[in-house]
Length: 343
Ligand SMILES: [Zn+2]
Ligand SMILES: [Zn+2]
Image (tube, rainbow, N blue to C red):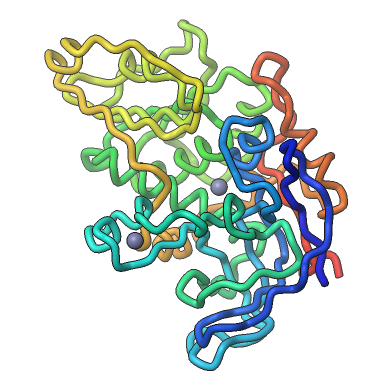
């Protein structure tokens, strides 16, 4: 048996026991989970904003160690440190054949931590094609931010940023910060807009001493408004109006934050007359993941981690994330450690 955090019917997490999964298919790999990042989606499930299957083991942003491999696994061996690519896809449907693997038609039953058992547990089994080797000089703490980085790369691609032109990122939560450092690394000057002072301070902890210039962190007041930029990314998900105000004519707005309750009023004429492009890209596609693994090696992403807890301490883990935007945040990236880290 192993420990696992299970979703209850009334949307709580409960520490329970599950049979330890086993290698069944030739391409299966058994991974001993080291740690899993808590994602905004996990919180959304627990507050009823995103639906998941009761009884499922939640968690998807995972890293761990290979314990056992199926007979046809050639690229991995026991002892290897790996990152889980949790956006599974079939590779055969229309969407996959078009390269839009994040919109695979075969999602039902294959969304890790949502309707298929995830990584808030001690072990997990996955096909080898969804596991990536962690480069030798990359820590588990850095590697655990690879999945959010893959999301950032997909959304930066969707933005079609004119070469090294400035980018405004709205929101300095984990996704906003990952987006900002990725855009800066790719050559753009970045302005991060965040109204919460804890998050602004943490943004400085991430950036200072790494980038010597080209990243500004500003509040959300009207005095703080940056110049219009050709690209604006809303990582909050309910800031479309502000994003349209801040984008230059002929520029692009990318909606990236998940907020199932947000609504916005846009004036279509403004989109037309100002030549704006408003777009979304979802999480990430297959090829973004290996790119993110490579890029993570060059970014100090571990600085985003503000808290770590064990599986037993799951209530505390979600409690530090519970603050409403009105009362202020006290956490950034929270990780939950499993057997690989605690045994
Ligand atoms: Zn996630
Ligand atoms: Zn597919």
